[in-house]
Length: 385
Image 1 (cartoon, rainbow, N blue to C red):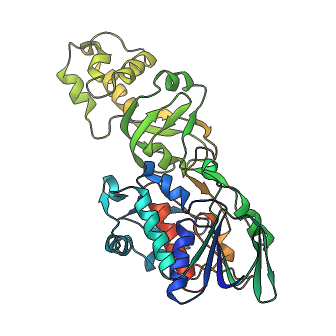
Image 2 (image 1 turned 180 degrees about the vertical axis):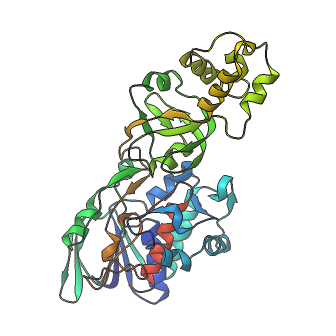
């Protein structure tokens, strides 16, 4: 089979690349080993697809070259993306911190992207096996179970190692290496954090307790925290995990609450009961026990009250490590951007080869940033492939 563009990977980046190529009247074949397109999109946001964020900037991404994302993001704003899918019948709802979710679920977005790709003539080959890819003169040859595919341009949109349960593999990195591309260290990102020995018992006892917090350390992150039997999870923790490598985090269990004023209003209550007015009951009891606080609030000295407020505003939590790729939503690291054009996503040393999406060393914060990078990088490559 001969086509202008072969795209390996039918995720969000691959589909958007196919749409952009098809609009330019390029013949396109999208190949994926999965039997469904955009499986990660289908699972994202708990099946509701946190499809973008209205407040996106390069500062929301981790990359060895922090300037790399600027060009693609500038050419596809979140408002332009939302106007496009809204016009196509995909309704979204804005929730906290600028996140947009699909009202009718992730499937509505996947169906829209797939239909858009097919409308411009892109062919889809799902459930295919890709054995290898190489450049032969001026064309690329992709060996598949249905026979070789020859293409003038090849786009690697195979995603990262995160969510192996959805079929994710490291094949994209192997292909990239076969073309001589460097890969930065790969780490699980947007993943739960496991407790160290000092807090393992506390987390296990509080498993299932959830509350809004603010985390500080390598970055600031706000949102819900969930205690698990192995550590902590929840949106705030997943976001912080993108930046954490080692050392302590500080958890503010009472963001925006004046604890000293609250304690002054409840002098006769037991300390743990006073704390339970603003904290989950189990957490209030556990904190009181850990700090050795007993008796009524009136028995606390002014200094003790200040120390308690300070401790709850910056509770020290040093993770033992991040959960692995099985629990990670994204992969930190990837194809080194130094070898890729930030404008076209083309590999400088291999003309006609493009790399997009999560396979690149670009990782966004929690909240729609990674899906938006998939669209933006896919469209950027599709304007030239």
